[in-house]
Length: 108
Image (cartoon, rainbow, N blue to C red; front, side):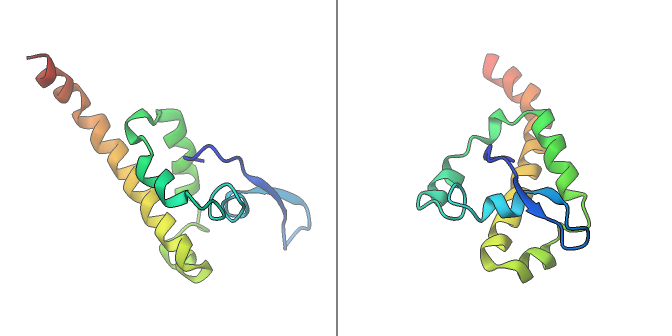
């Protein structure tokens, strides 16, 4: 979501119907399979996040399936991504709060 990787389709274990899964997409070659993945995270421009994108992220974060414990049980890599997403979310709200003051300071 934050890295503009669309969710992949996955069959639900309960219903057998297809559903969209960001975790399945994250396991693919565009995220965890990318040899430059750590560089992509470091170079990610948090200042250009939009409120619409953060609303999507918040929807996922509010899900009962998204927790530190579940990420940790899924994989060590998922734990790191979980922490990165939470830190990015926190940064977004702090940046949004101080941006007007920062801009005013830069103009003075």
